Image (cartoon, rainbow, N blue to C red; front, side, top):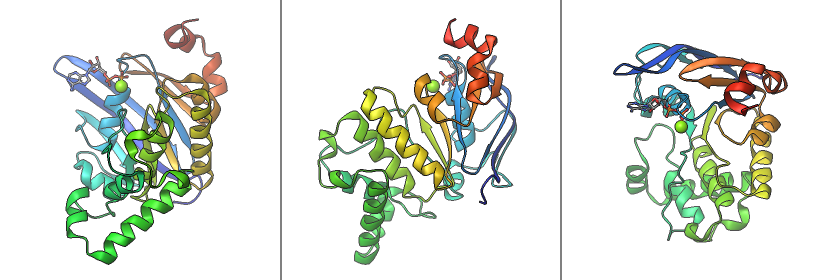
Length: 253
Ligand code: ADP
Ligand code: MG
């Protein structure tokens, strides 16, 4: 997409679980090259919103437009193929394999059904291609020195970067990150912030669910604040930080 083009348009997305309205008619947009932060207290509906967008859950009502196409109700595999990649709150890896192997395993090219089938079907040259792409994405996130380390030996920060490299192998337009800074030390957070800024400068759009307010304020272009399933407010970080409603609901001041 061109710089500034509309990438994601969430239109009155709603998710009900029985009588509980977990996401109450939420609307927001993400443009090319934007980092949008989705914040709010526990139980606000952030993960559910994430699951609606990625097709893990079908919305009760409302639409999700991705690159000008209505993707509501599509299976998550089809949505991924169109250029959406995500990381999970808990790092998924095979601890006794190398970092490169872990990322290559996840480097299922767009259009394939899954990781392992892609790997098992792959001939030598396709396998080489997977490893080349994995290495390229690991280098892109500053993990070039860790290629042959055992994944299980990595500290939390490099583990998160490994996850991001894996997501990048799908060549996404939109990257969704679920609390990538959870459990990171200050220096690791800064390294993560640098990587996300660099991706943004390359034109990537990012949706970030994150509790770390320092990180969110530093790198986000736009914040969407949820509370009890509803959209409390949205806007630029500087404005959100001053908003009395947000301070009361979330920052506790
Ligand atoms: P957050 O990610 O902001 O902490 P969630 O989206 O996980 O919030 O949850 C929002 C609300 O929806 C919570 O009250 C939660 O208990 C409820 N909820 C989430 N997923 C389910 C589910 N699969 N079934 C029933 N209730 C759910
Ligand atoms: Mg959550």
